[in-house]
Amino acid sequence: MNNKSWLKIFFTLILIQVLAIEIFYRTYDYNRHYVDYLIKTKLANLKDKEFETVIIGDSLAKNSISKLELHPNILDLSSNNAISIAGNYFILKRYLVNNKKPKNIYLFCVPNHLHQNLDTIFTYSYFTTIFTKKEEMESIKKIKPHIYDNYSFSKYTESRLKALKFFTHYKPKKRKKAVLVKESELIKKENFMNSQIRANIDLLKKDQNIIHDVPKVYIDKILSLCKDNDINFKLIIEPIPEESNKSFIQSKLYQYLKNKNVSIYNVNEHYKFNNYFFKGDGRHIKGKVNQFYQNFIDEHILDIY
Image 1: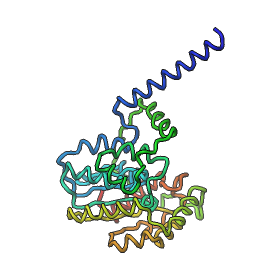
Image 2: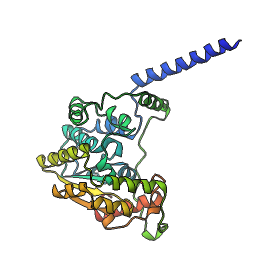
Image 3: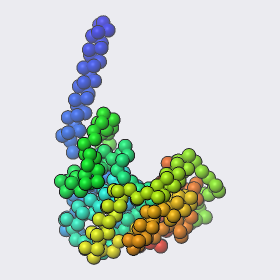
Image 4: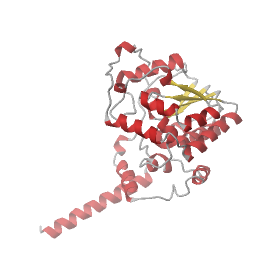
């Protein structure tokens, strides 16, 4: 067989593979990731339910809370940073359409989540391909008119490559009982600093005097939603490096929240999380620190056990 024949066979096989992936992507309803599962499976199957407390939040909250067996009167709808406060709002709206209103809503997040303006590489996979109800699209397009129009080759390949993982269709892990972890069990390294922790600190300093449009609008919408439904709202600021916390409490956004009379519990004002407690990405906490944080939530914030 000559080289031309090999090339024809090679490109034909690639074409068949691309077509197969595209057909699968368009026809098979599968959960690509946790947010897909949250919206398309968990939230979609909640009908006429009643919970005293609903938790929303970013991935730090999800990594801690979604692993736990919670009180039956608590519903965990935490997700990730990429959906932004707008995504948190849409999740609450979807929940309230089909279920009874809770007494309390807790938003667990790091300050970066309060600055998320739907302009990252993850916006396509975690927001614009998920929040596609007419009212959701119309709402967000008032701030970002072209958010559903921007479609690049990189977004196309990223979404289709995820389709290759259909054999690992996302399923939640079984929740486990809480484990008591004492502070003495946590390994500390004084003055520990890696490049990602430094980058996150610098990012908060950069945003210190900025309130982005998306979080501003949807923080107000969540507050209005809670007020209209007589729901208590509380914002929980999750563990961050000490320098990041200093930037946050000096920020224009923090002052905006205080002026709105938002009930804020800043974990970092009650316990200082050592920089070594954070993973390589500089944002998520690791190992036993997660369990220690779970214990801290249960003792000081919300009776989750």
